[in-house]
Image (tube, rainbow, N blue to C red; front, side):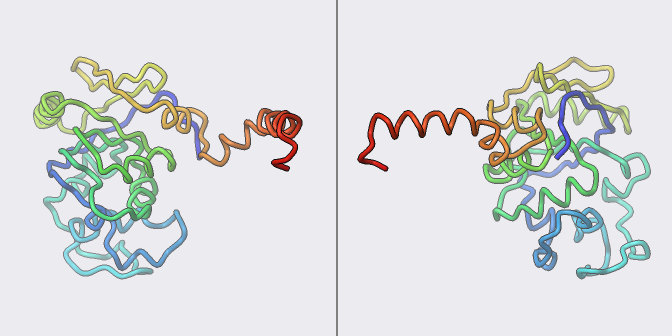
Length: 211
């Protein structure tokens, strides 16, 4: 997983609340255990007019002209702006894999499904929680200026859109470290192997009956 520090990209406004993981990646694509290749099926039932199947060539599929990620100004969006409870529903990690493979690096919403939030930070996507009134300001800004970019400074935990004030967001320390260092929980644990070994040796000395 790549490290995440400073980032900027076009913001796509997905003006829906309670977007569940089945909408993000439908159930027929759950057979794959490969993180790559799912981006073309992201929001499959919203992006396309036909029914998608695994292995399908999506280039020629009929697209819904009014879906935000099909609009020319948002086809290369890297930031997704959404409403409350984004990523609710099942715990499928495929939803995050599809977003990442499409190119989404940041999702901004008032709230997220708990498991989805954790899956994002483990797969290189930054979930930014902002107050509902701040989200509303951003939706208005994007409506007035379609195709604007936003920037993120993860170290300082600042999100800013063009021609707009910056917003500070909170992020759990472990999640922040995973993104900053581009690792996962296993990697973080292994990085402490010397300390773990020292602890185990000292414990064996203090409590030999345990060993």
